[in-house]
Image 1 (cartoon, rainbow, N blue to C red):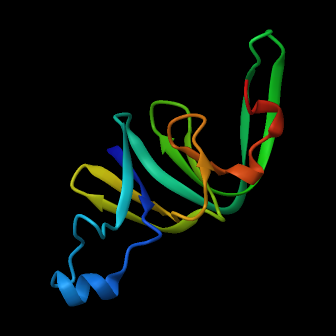
Image 2 (image 1 turned 120 degrees about the vertical axis):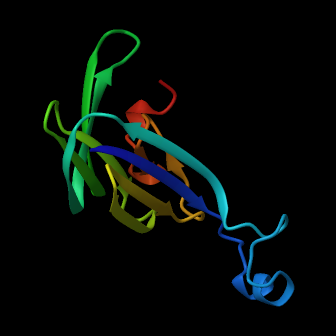
Image 3 (image 1 turned 30 degrees about the vertical axis):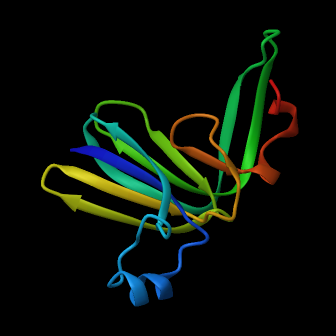
Length: 143
């Protein structure tokens, strides 16, 4: 099975009350629910998805000068996608930024929807990873 993951940033100024009163409960041009959406697809043979609440995510790489770095980011919701024919792929979101998520299995694919709070600024260092600004390693900012 493959996996399609959708990451949504909720509009912190969305008013359901206004939508109900003026637009039959629907969002409108000046009152929208979602700021933006990212979509990622894994076409590997996904067997299951493990969800780790209040886990940690390791971010590693090299600085421009070639020096290696590795940081452990705590308080993350980690989605570990296990594949029959490859390594584990991880998507992660800071618990503080997470509003909700939904995981469904339909036909031949998993559909993962992750909704993030609009009031929590996040950094997206690589696709599928969202870390609140205050938890992002200072050493990596500006590099």
